[in-house]
Every structure is written in C-alpha cells, then in structure tokens.
Length: 183
Image 1: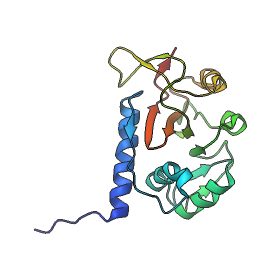
Image 2 (image 1 turned 60 degrees about the horizontal axis):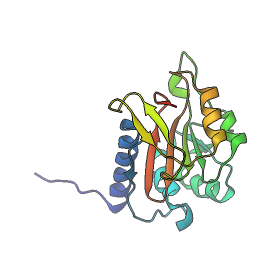
Image 3 (image 1 turned 30 degrees about the horizontal axis):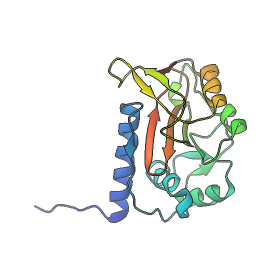
C-alpha cells in the first residue's frame, strides 16, 4: 500500500484551509495560519496570499481595492470582478466603499453572500458579546475594527443574508459568520 504525501504547497494550503474552517466553525476563537511564506505576495501581505492560495481557483472570483494584492491574486487564476459580484473580498486596509457593495446573497441563494478577508487586530478592540452557532452560550470578543464596519454589518445583515468574515492579524485569524449575533 502506498501513501501519497502532500507537497509543501499542498500542505500549506491544507493547513490554511483548516484554520479558516475552524475559524468559522468556532466564531471568536483565534486560529493560527501556517507560518510558511506564500509565493503569491510579498511578506507584508503574506497572510492574504496564504488565504488566497487556499480559497481562490479558476472557478472563483475576487475583489480587492489594493493594486499590489490584486496583481498577486491574479496568479491564482480567479477572476477579478466588481465589488457587488465578487465571491471573495480582500481588504488589507479599511475600504468602506467596496465593502458597502459586497453581496449579501438573496433569499433564493443566500450562499451568494461574499466572504470578506479583512486586516484587523484580534485583540485590544472594544468588547462585544457574540452569540450563535459554534459558541457555547456567549463569548466576549475584542476585535479592533472600525466602528463603521460594525454599523455596516448591522445594516446589511438579515440572516440568512449577509457576509462571512475573516479578520486577519499576522498569522492569526478569527471568523465571524453571518449567523453570529454581535452586541
């Protein structure tokens, strides 16, 4: 019996995907991305490159307002689309304009809601209480994101419509699914 081993690239993508999966499965818990360098982007945007390697392919689409990241994400083969049409949004810096156009899906196809990958701090922000699937009773999360993000999320979220969000801080990532209630 022969066992196929992962190539280093496959292992990196697998570990990244698992961190992302657990981040949305257990909202508010910090997950760790692999500390391997992504060949897609320079070190300052490395976590975004790791996530792009794991999520983007020829069948997906993305939007980012960052020109350097856009050029790097092109290497995945995914299509770059307008903010209202893209499945994945990458925000290494705050951009309310693009975010306000991100799809929340439709009642017929709620899975068409965008997945947002945003830079932020996973500690040190204002305390907010989270409740919902994957959370035992409630948790206190201290994400440092602009208040305008929380206001925009509250205005656009109408479960099952909304966004699934990953907050990236270096190699740490926290998931915020659309099913999570934040107070």
